[in-house]
Length: 262
Image 1: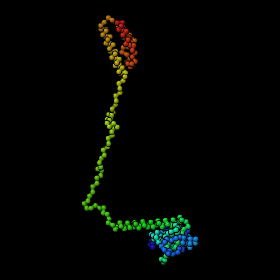
Image 2: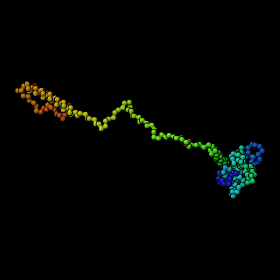
Image 3: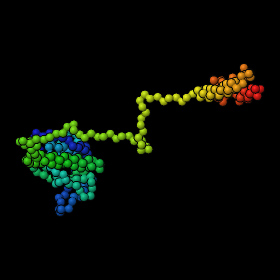
Image 4: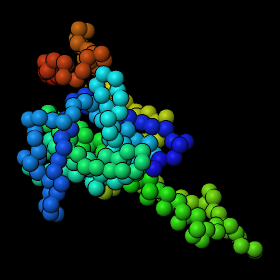
C-alpha cells in the first residue's frame, strides 16, 4: 500500500458507470459481458481514478453524496486487479477490496465507448510513469555502487598547451584570365597628349616657303638687272592658322607666271 506521507492525485473522473454482479468463472477462459445482466445493472454511480505514490485506486462513489461504494487498488496494469472482457471494449472486471483485506470480483461498464478509452489510457499513463521511476532508481543505485572515474592528475604528470601557434595560411595571388600577370600603372603617372595638327601644318608650310625663297635668291644672283614683280596679294608663306588641306591649289601657278615673264 501507499505510505502516509504521499499525496493523492486524481487521474480520471467519469460521471456514469454501471456495476454488475458476475458469475464465478468456471474455467481459465476470459470473461464475457454477454453472460451478465446488462439491462439491469446492480448499481450506478461515478468512477474516480486516483494515484497515491505508485499505486492507483479505482473508486466507485455515489453521484450526489460522494459516499464510497467500493474501491479497487491497482499495483500493476494490465494485471489481476483490472481485466478486460473478450466480447466488448466497454466492459471490465475489477477486483475490489475492503479495509479488512477481503476481495471480490465485479463487472463495470460504460455507456460511452470514449469513457472506456479514457479509463484505459489513464491507467496506462500512470504505470508507464511508474516504470520510468523504477528504471531511474535502479540506474542511480548502480552508479553509486560502481567504480568512480578518477580524472585527476597523477603525481608528476604534466600537459602541454599550444596557444596562438597555428599555421599561417598563404593568401592566393590573383591571376588574369590569360594566364599572364599585368603590371599595374605607375602611381601618379600621366599620359602625354598627342601633338596638335596645327603644328605639323606650320612645319610643312615653312619648308615649302623656304624652298621658294632659295630659288628666288638664286635667280636674283644670276641676273641682277631683272626685276621680279611679286604679287602683293599672294602670300608665299600661307596661312599659319589654317591646315595644309585648306591652302588653295592655285597659289603655285601664280608663282610660275612670274617666272614666265622673266
